[in-house]
Image (tube, rainbow, N blue to C red; front, top):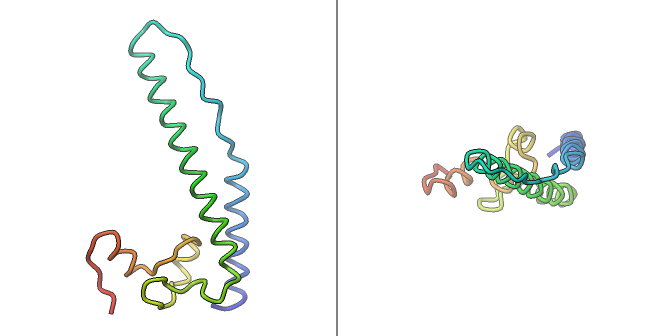
Amino acid sequence: MTESQKIELRTHLTNELASLNGADAAAIEMEYTADDIDYASQITQRNLQLALAERASSKYAQLEVALKRLNSPDYGECEECGEPIGIARLKANPSARLCVCCQEEQDTGFGACA
C-alpha cells in the first residue's frame, strides 16, 4: 500500500469518525398512552433508536481500531490468508480485516481462496 493510499484512508477514517461522533443518540422517551397501538408504536420506535445507536457505537469502535492499525505494517493484509486486501475494499470498509474471498468464506462457508 502506498503512502498516498494510507493518507487517503486516514482522511476517510477521520471523516467517518467525525460524522459518527456528531450523531448523538436522540433522547429515547416513552409517553403515557392508553391506546395499545400507540404504545406498541412507541416501543417499536424506541427499539429502532436503540439498535441504531448501538450500531453507530460499534462502527465507531471499529473505525478507531482501524485508524490505529493504519500505521502498522500489516494493515491492509488479510488476517486469514495474508494476501493484500484490495484498496477499493479498504476505501469502502477501512476496518476490513479479511479479503473479499476470506470474508465470503467466513460468511457462507464457501469460498474460492487459493
